[in-house]
Image: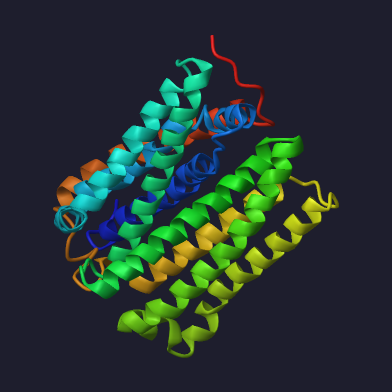
Length: 332
């Protein structure tokens, strides 16, 4: 059905798809977690209710991406997780704190809920920051030098800001009234910080990586490729303008900011793929060098073509069921 040469591209595409879906879905609920107020129980309950039906299932896509990396590119899996052992462990601690806090805040007495809200906020921030930190190390080819660590720290902050942006956009779409207005202000501020973060990464990345410089600034392909970051900057600018109108109550289409932010995320992710393709470990391994035995991959591909559509279907179904504005949070 598929040739041996096509299998690395197919599995790399499936893994890339799982990663971007995870970044979008878990990105907004991590962003909501980081925005969670610790001094307003009504607003925190509403924000938790907005992600309640989805947040746990969103992490399925991360598990899928790591599983595909292990199955299809075992050598790369060993190198990546070996280099990121400590950051991954810290991220998992953040996810555990977040999960425990989410459940415990629903079971404790009201005066103790603030503690678990703070822990949920901390776990969300820790998880988002470590994901950005790992992305920075990936770009820096997993080198632990003062420059690579500094870049990774900046990348960690950038991902936190980007997740805050998509989280605020989610709240604009899912809430009403005063909280929606607050979310609009949060999204506006986070959008400007995201613009700065993308600009910094786009400026630094070609300087520290010769391959990125070659890919993006070699003519004539540069004429076409440079339109991608330009489009992302334009979308952020349009979103900022619409949010300004929304603050002045002159714009009321609540789903548009979220859709624009999704486009920015996809554009940034495509830029990352373009920068490093076909490497799965930048500067060390390509998808063609690290692919496992093709005969076993053909068998696993049939399973993937069943599992991934099934995950997509129940994801779409859950969002369809719980679509619309969030309702007051109640516990039974």
